[in-house]
Amino acid sequence: MSSTTQERAGADFARLTDPFRRELLAHCYRMLGSIHEAEDVVQETYLLAWRAYGDFEGRSSLRTWLYKIATRACLKALERGTRRPLPSGLAGPSDDPEGPFGPRQPETAWLHPFPDTMLAPDPAATVESRHTTRLAFAAALQHLPPRQRAVLLLREVLAWRAAEVAQLLNTTTASVNSSLQRARTQLAAADPVEDKVMEPTDPDQRALVDNYAKAFEDADIPAMMRLLTEDAVFEMPPMPTWFAGRDNVGAFLATRLRTPGAMRMVPTSANGQPAFAVYMRQEDGGYHAHAILVLTLVGKRINRITMFHEPDLFSTFGMPDHAPSP
Image (cartoon, rainbow, N blue to C red; front, side, top):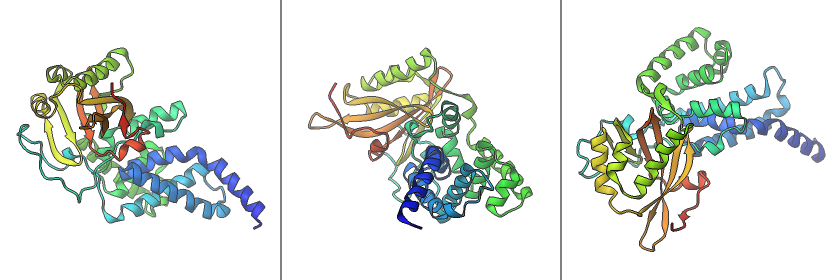
């Protein structure tokens, strides 16, 4: 193949496949639970697809072909048995909100949040992607074996036929249907609150999120507690310790959040949910990257606060390492 022909083929490949990149990223995130690993697998998918592009015969759509390559790459990445939980998926909550944290578990790979800015730009696709990347859904998927995870996503999210999934996984249609039923049952048990989750789409819910941010910045624990459901949860990966119940959450925050103005909250969104980049004031007076905080709303209250203490995530969210003083 001449260099000119190869350049044209490369341009055609990019033009035809680039529109699927973001939705493939969301799919790989659901499979893997890590935005960084998902980016790596999507990169690998496009490399494999480019190498095989000359043999693509069009028996399926280009989109379906890319999803097949991506799903196989995800399953290969999961062969080492990595599961990315949240702290609440490993052990029970702490009953001592004023006590020390449990030791960090460096051997544990934790679930990551997914920036909404990386979702597909198409409005219809974005609504569906937001729903199927919710944090509770992503965490619940981690309880499924990799092949069950793939079956559930291909059948329920992508609406593939059972025969298509069976062909991809080199199994039978009956096996796919059985796996789907087991996956649905296990997912329902792991994610009982998901159907009640609300999006901040009306003024009252937006005000709820804004009021939480103000109370957090003001270190106003009573105001924060008024915004929580009675069964609210607070967790902070990579710390394994977490708290359940509004009173326990409030008691914990009272021991850690004492100084008004010590934190700054910059709005963002993750997993189809309201989120904040949290900056902490340091001795130099500047505000440094501290955590990505994701809120789960149920009705007119906050049901779950997940605070990812991984400053490396800030660049993924397009956030600077430092925030200006207020």
